[in-house]
Length: 122
Image 1 (cartoon, helix red, strand yellow):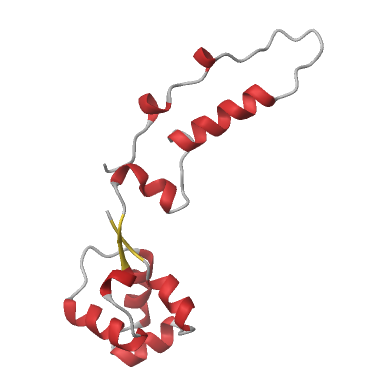
Image 2 (image 1 turned 120 degrees about the vertical axis):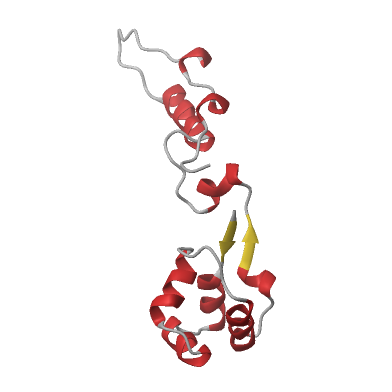
């Protein structure tokens, strides 16, 4: 998946979305769609205008992220992803046990991350 990093570049350059929209001649709504990745394509002329205003390269705005890492990189790791399963396993292993409790965690109690990984639309 290609991820747009326009928000990062705008922050680095201290340029607002509204100012960028005005300078390249597109609506603020379209800038918002580009920033949030709610687009399937971007014209080279638009990308060129953004790069000219922000004095950057297209590679500064676009990043390739393998599908298996998309949720993690975007900070939206779902409960069924590998990272969350590992964190849950550590939490269970470290949880204090009540006196006389029969609760214990073994490796077999934790779902193997590779068996539960799945991304919507992948």
